[in-house]
Length: 549
Image (cartoon, rainbow, N blue to C red; front, side, top):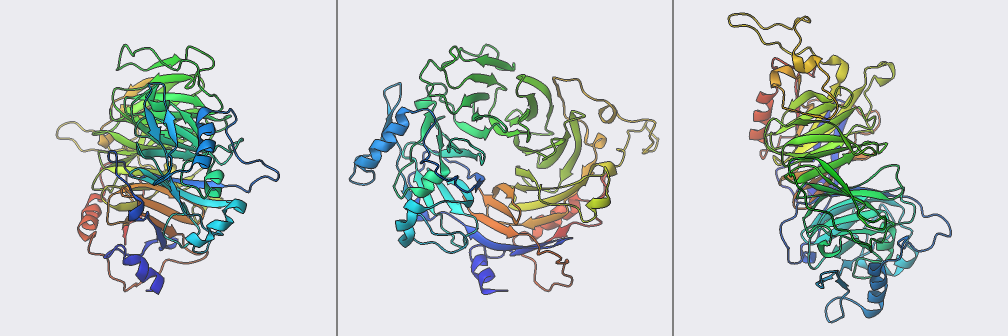
């Protein structure tokens, strides 16, 4: 094992620094984490979430990024640069409509060029810092961190501290027109939009030139749980809250008009309410469910929005028409995460039933379920950069690679070829034998559910079961998310510890006869997962065995 791998593994003793797939080894390249000394008093526990930001080259002659519509928060940010912030200085104070104040300050250390270690001594070059590259944005406690994905430096290059709340969700738009490309949702319900490049350029100790929405909870004092830009839109974004509401915003609106909404009459009914004034921001409220909205995800064209929540339902909406297209229930408990395939044909969900479910948007129902995790599934993602080895001659048989992570500390990879789904095992009369006959299909498998309906969870015997291709104990702590990039898989733990797993080198084959010992930390879990992948009545054609690392 190399000295770099040894150093990395010292942070997670007992865990292996690679895992094997049919196309080769994924290797742990390096890790990212927040310096413990930066964390301040935590205002309520917040799970670390991960955003990968692809910052494009700065257009020539582009002025310093500012909000399209001047806002009081932006003016106060500019004033704070003159007044100073931090210990012994006058802090930046945001005063909301209810007269209470909220302070935002920050601490940062800006690094140098991409791909090399950075240090605090490089901060003199910040003014000319272009910022082009790929960044990891993650939250921990009351601080938002920004790390350079391509740097070996473990520490973040910038940290922003929120003194009266915790950042809990964030989203990045690489195609933002006016520079404000980063959204941040707080535990208090407040939302900010900022320019990522401007945060990287600024050596100061605060959130710079931020546009502030839902100031001090004027529209909703419910916790932000998830946030997303609307693809192919001019600065529209949505925010999910713990009270079951989704608010739609336009980032270029100042929102000075009345932004309150009437009381919800029926908590169990999906309702859409538009703002009273065309100058209001947010512009609309969707009341979706009684419990928390746990995750939001848009199709790549922005036409459809998927939402999962505390009540265990996936709901898919026509975003422009503001209508429910279809929805379905988990097998048990809440759904915690969801994501779309790049072609918009399938949606993944995961949650408290320890399962991964695959939903067909065309058939409006679950078409496969995956068993392999031993605890709640906290993150799912399609690998849009992966292609099957023989994909050129596959015709209409498209194979998907996706990943999932859970509170069992495991990273699972799955392969899914939809035309290989075996007809589900059919129920049989007492004394009879179950068959795979084509003349007695189950109602779930044959029926296309009507538009706008919420479906109960079908019997697991009526839906094909899939098994993971790879099961790898990736972290020592429970995981909260994963992302795929062109060169790697990025995983993050609930405590804000990030690992970057590089893809196999081009043409590398899967090594055989490796003598490296398996980690003991996940031995029991792996044996349990292996037992769970035995063939069941409903199944998908899978590799003969799961690869455990």
